[in-house]
Image (cartoon, rainbow, N blue to C red; front, side, top):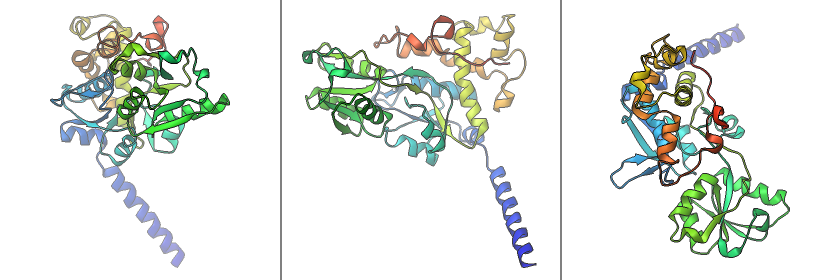
Length: 340
């Protein structure tokens, strides 16, 4: 009898816990009730995330957060940006300090299975490289044996650096810093022979040096760095919303729908365009949104290509080529599942 009572008690407790969990508002409900999205961002990488002296944020990752806000609120300004270091970003996401992490973060197995995150796709395909002074006359990263390397701690960059040198039986001296700004400043001051980070970041930091022409990016890419937005595990509705915001941006570019022509495209007879913009079917319902969720995104923020161009590409000071971040129809890797 005692054992039976224990079983019944445990079963009742399980039901109570399950009901309590079910009664908790979803993250989308919480965000809607709050009235704004909280997004964790990088405060120091021009082109990806950077606040100005008035608190205004710009960047590729920043615009993704604005796209999520546009889908939810029909207002891309309803975002609060939280500046996060590489070291603090995961704690902030785990603790619920931020709803979404959009901060040039690499998608890895351990970050999903060990830290409780889900990556909502790849927004930018990147890879790690090295920045060195021209006067060293180096043509390859394989010539860096014995070099001192400035690197930011708490990143996959550290691990890739160690793997590269160990895999090539080379010695090196890692010089670790808490953030990229300190690492670059040390490199420019001559404390290190080279600076390493994602290739996109190398071009950004090179432009910020006192004399950019004194340094060169070596040709090797030593890692795969699939960068993308991340959310906490356990809320499928929120994960789907963030994921399909990215897919809507890519699909819009592929279909030729942009911020300037979206209203004209709303008159299109093409089924794919009509589904995207909410005039055929109600695909927003499964995301907890209205039928015009993707229309809102494109209207307020633009498509993937527009976001890339103004922050990183030809419309920006960085002039980064699309490369593998071009659409799959143009030789790149950006490919999105269909909205149907």
